[in-house]
Image (cartoon, rainbow, N blue to C red; front, side):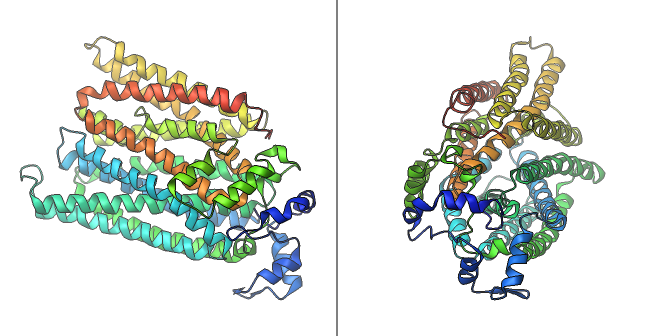
Length: 526
């Protein structure tokens, strides 16, 4: 995607014969050299003058080997964003579980369902918005708008939660109209904050880091691992820190909500400043329709999509609605792997909201719950380390296969706890939590392998719409698992949710075996 790659010149020469087919309103013709970049560039960024050939060449060349400072800024920015989001979602789940209808999964399920459905129906549109922004030199502006929407909703939602706790005694007062309206506001604000967060993730992980990496696939893989490790680190430290904070304040929710609001305000300004600095330091991010196409690496049309599919995909990109997004998505050679990854979101044997509520119902204390989630994330970090080790020694297809296999084996331990006699409550709880904890190794290694396969096989012009559709599918199954939570909202019926989730993982295993590991269409051996 980056026009900065020195090795990309040969790729462009290989693709000249198909140049005419790439022209349409949505996907303009790729720039062929530095001169075309100068003609396209009609702006100045902090002294960067596109009319200065020497400065342009130096700036573009700098993105061939991204400086350590760029990676450092990206890591710090991601750290702020992920930590704020994880803490917010954890506290909201505790608020809905402990303060209102504590004997039911109803509110947690409805909150998760609404949030997920927003991403299902608007994720593709968000991806289209990001594609349009990338093709019109508005990457930075669009991301700033997304960040403002995300953090604005979080702060407003925190305010509504605090208002509910101070105006009403939620343990005794009936759910009258004012309380219901405030609960609806929490659902809406929390849902839109998730949508904006997903859009931000699509922009950074499906576009920005590919541009920053240029044609350096090893650098891209290492950056993927680093960002995923940050995700896991935040999921580890966020709930654990929140758990200790709650323990320090006597498990009072009000101080935690205030702290969440403050943390998110700080994170907004940090992310805003860091991403602005990154964009201004990498001219390729400011160039219209940058000329790196990840499907062309290592020369040839065998690396991902064939030319015919790419042309058809680009023509469809102008109609960014849900159904056309699905049509584009399932044209990709890696569609089976992406769909398998989506299926895993139907699984409740995780460290998610329903599992959290279930463990609270089983009597696990809040600070132990936070610590357990932190330990599970630490174990997940091992998965990212093993991914780096295995992917350097075997293909991404093989890495994805062993990862999903290990994931299924570990969850089998958790699922087997259903068949232990009821009088061994401690044993069943231990089997459940240990299996879920160990499974994080396979889960995150699988996530990384499929994510990089998507990055390397999806054409530049449609990364946004394909990434948006991927997130929509993930949230569709995430929404379905909340629907199941609404249907079987009694925690004593959690075994039904476990059975459905385990079946989804087994189906994903079969999809990966058939559509990725044994596929002849995917030819990415990295």
